[in-house]
Length: 423
Ligand code: ASP
Ligand code: MG
Image (cartoon, rainbow, N blue to C red; front, side, top):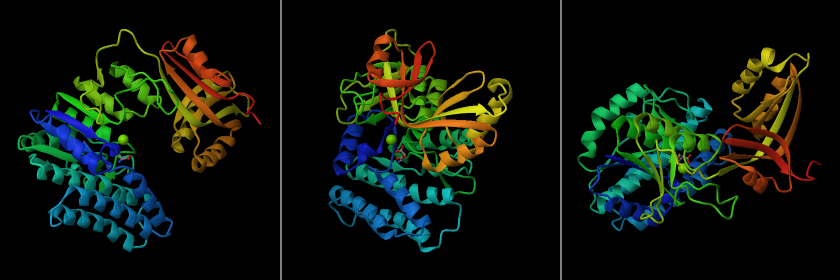
């Protein structure tokens, strides 16, 4: 049994859904569970809708556009305008209408999950209906009855024992009767409220199902030929990495490689399930295989993060950082949910680079300022090189001033800005 995950880009229009069906058709000898994301940029649109509702601004235009987009895709996919999918999708959208009719009262994160999860529910219904209509036996399943989570809305934690018990007991029988189609990104609480697992969480869903089913493999179908050694957004010349160890994949995603969600790898590594990253544009290509095998000739990889803030923290009483202040400082970052991308300490100062977030930064700095003097720089970039050497460092630091540099045996991180941009 194998798990396929199709992201938003792969099902962004009718042609994408047809292409998905071809990929399934060509692999029908396998038992398959497929996990789909919301279509195209639907999650962003539903986020916008949620914030408009919470801010009590106009929601109608945003919602209409979301509905029109899905209707257009369905119109192209289903000749029969009486096909039950039209009703099914309309009824699912009605759940949003019910929310919008009332004044926002509940917790904002809870509301977010109830609205944003609709994207995956709808895309999976459309995909499932299309596969059935194309003659591929298909079973739609509701991920919320399998992925059991706590009620940390927008970032729900999976209850693995409950989840695996549900999946292992019920899903194999379903898959035996046809391709199972489910939603990425969403789960359910013990009170049957919908949760989401964090942005880009569909990869993680695929890994959870695969792990609980002891799948042979997971394949993530993407718009790139595999895992590249840099994001083509930053480099003209990128190289596809044919094979990666789980360990390297975890490191790369942790540092910000967006090709796979960082939580995806660990459950697969624990079960020794290989993960393939392949192109839905060229489904015959071999892609990248992520497994326990180490690549004997590692290819240097580059991860860029822009919009970084470098914060330097000095205890006001000149006490030493490590002994007296580190846990306090970490606590403050934790309280404000600010993730540290890289850090370095000296005797009496501690420097960190974090993503710029207008909303969080001011509050974080205010908390820190109680006991510390703070200096910070904005508009920086953070480059991480895995398997670095001098040549790769030179390649990325041309015309840059380096403000902070941290090296371990295999990984080098640099926080930098364009030369002469300090004003
Ligand atoms: N649709 C969700 C998002 O865009 C989850 C996913 O695509 O993985 O974040
Ligand atoms: Mg994605």
